[in-house]
Image 1 (cartoon, rainbow, N blue to C red):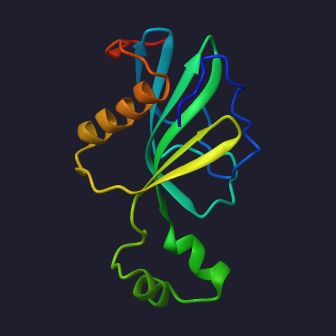
Image 2 (cartoon, one colour; image 1 turned 60 degrees about the vertical axis):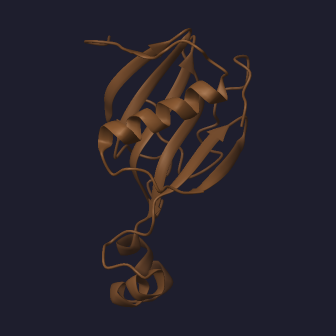
Length: 153
């Protein structure tokens, strides 16, 4: 997904899994004219979502929320009662022992959601942040290196 800096702002009602732009921000970066916010386990646009987002990055230009790249996984504890299944049954269906399904990479922008498939990278948070930053830089064709903003706002 390549976006123009003049793209429309993200519609918070378009998808239940869009990250709220000021929720659980742990770091901020600046790359050219893009402000990038890193979110750890943020609130989503819908409180009824059965998706867990361990980490996401949102891109803002001139105060407009234009893009999100996130690592998402199904929350099996939330899904089980909705599907009328026990957690153990759902874990068996997913082939996992944890409360979550596999991590997938999702991107939101210009009114659409795009999946890049399963995330097979490192579980190290710094590595995941670098991965999400690279998606944002590629999406906006930005060549400036992101610099962390200390003591934002």
